[in-house]
Image (cartoon, rainbow, N blue to C red; front, top):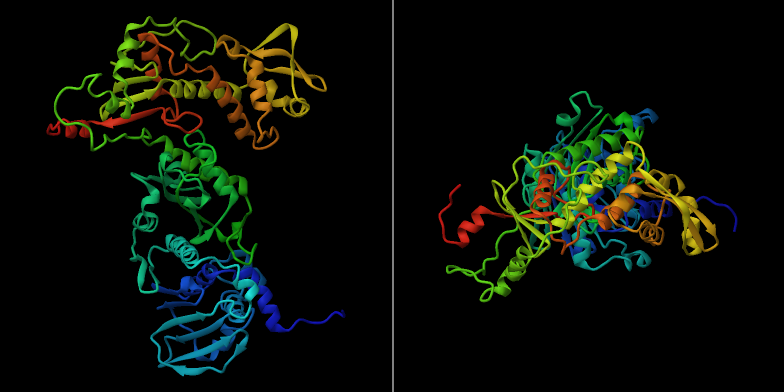
Length: 591
């Protein structure tokens, strides 16, 4: 086949494949145009989830009748005029492709009235065929109608999902755009149903709460980089983040905007996840919204036709500042989750282990086990103190009142309510933080063996021993391959030996993981191994502790960073608020 120039209509359809792939992307392009036109009110209407019809109306500046043919032409735009303009883009759109691409795969009608004109005008593009401009009745602003999306491209239309799915994607896109422009009112209709109604506001926090709603959970955390980094910071970061317990299984619960533009950036996502590391379970993502403001010259938005991906000129700096801002918000918050009492708990009368045993267990409190635990002798003191070596426990200054219940739970109180602590989870967090602090400052103390300890290992584990040599040395291990299916341990971490943990077991568990990666994110890999060591060394559910040990462990709840969650992200403690106890016992509030 000879080389030949493609028809313009085919060129537009090819471009449409990059810009327009579903109703949500059509809405995104049209709403961004409306925002660039200075709209203060935008209304979106869908039929058939957007597959049959999309209408976007705004009260922006409008398009002069003489410019309508250019508006629907490819590579025609009012937002840039020279190459240098690409270096400091402040508008949402700038490629001049959206309307031409949409008109190549649908029936497109643009009706607009510019503020300087007495009447409006309209132009139609039906799958690439453009009609002349004609007069039309219109208010100031623009209305764009899109019908039969991919109607003449069945191969593309069949990939569209169901009506509810496509409508849901449109809702997500509109919410995301609305987060970056709280001063603009947004309304979305699915047929005759109003699915979204966001009033214009000068309070960005109000817009975030209105748009994300329940996803933020209770008492979201305010992130303010100016407070953490100072007014001289090269970027500004502001937002609301959900507490760790509201983390989602999918990353779409976390939204970013850059200078008002919705973006998806792996570096920002990683920065937030790292800030929450140890507070949420692995594989989950914090929910919330962060608005990043930066000099447009410091970011390239001309990376992808959809304009959702960007490239920072100093990605490490942006990552660090976002991470610090989010971490500061977490550090200043009271992250202990509350455990409201169930509404069906018995009212009145005294509780007893016999008559209310099932109710007690449902609430996580076993009366009989508690009595048995109190009657049993306690174990020798365990080292909860700051040093990793075995040293006498410091005497607590003011030991709180507490109870060890069920040989797993420590029950105490604070100003806000009754606190139930998971002794294993809390001890695991305490040791994890101290191990990490020591490793970041050097290496863990190591105990050489007189005779190397040879352990069997798979061929994969032997290869991984060689790959992980630098990290193993930092952790106090001296382990080397001893053959195709064996490894020799020449030195072991003193910490594991003193805690009665088999170092070879820790090695095998880590080296045998499916997701093993010793060369990946250094902080993440280090946290994974330290978490495993701390988990195996921590006191277990079922270990009876002395009063002195319990008092020292409870002290760590206030002294150790992120003590409200174990390194896996599970809570170390839950609080039953005094108000719930007062309500259940029929008492008037005392506080």
